[in-house]
Length: 78
Image (cartoon, rainbow, N blue to C red):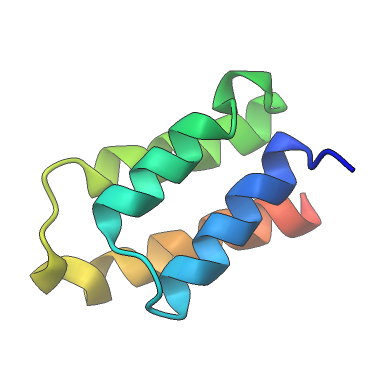
């Protein structure tokens, strides 16, 4: 069974929140999930997250967590 891009990104976001992957792994998982196939509102949320992840080190995890949660909510409920 193939997962949709939204499902693959939700999975990656959940793994990041649980501390199983870092920022770079999250960015890679999003890129592999074909974000160009997302609905416009979902793509906007993912683009915002990717912009925040750009250049963010592990010390900024707390700052990024809010955006990750908002992106997760947008994809899961949106």
